[in-house]
Image (cartoon, rainbow, N blue to C red):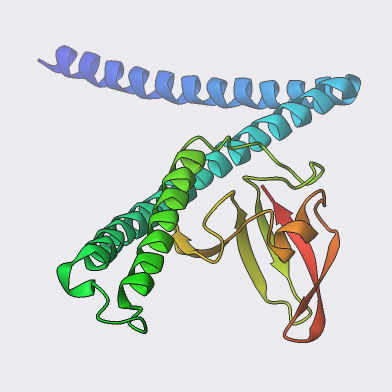
Length: 228
């Protein structure tokens, strides 16, 4: 019984020592690998440059992907607002058309213009319905371009402007929906069109450019601090 106990104790001690030595060897090997990689970088600077370029490419690809996802969210939000406006305008146009052709709308005399006014209103609302239908079709097919700091601003760009008071405002350059405010990811984004004064001032510009815009009788300068 005594021999068996000593043998068991000896085996436990051996296992403990072997584990400790194995751990120490692993630590030394890891340290040698780290020192070897550092030495290789010193001996071959091009390898370091390649690694930095690879990291930059990965970071850029991630930024592009996040930008595309954010733009898709903006397009979806804009389409939802246009669809809601179209539904309301279609209902209003139908009501105006029915009012223009209703029996009670017939003029009672030469000065009664109720029917004429109702027909003008119906025609205007019908035109607005057609515009909204065209807007939905165009926005749904909008090509989401990859735009960075050196790429000239164009339709589908998201632009962040900073004014003299260091207040930043985010804009989405879209073919329709000017004046609409969207909220994506907790950020408020204003939609502008290429035909708007600000849209025209931004087209063709790049990051860090300064644009001038006259608003409320005074000239404002805003700096393009980000584009994507």
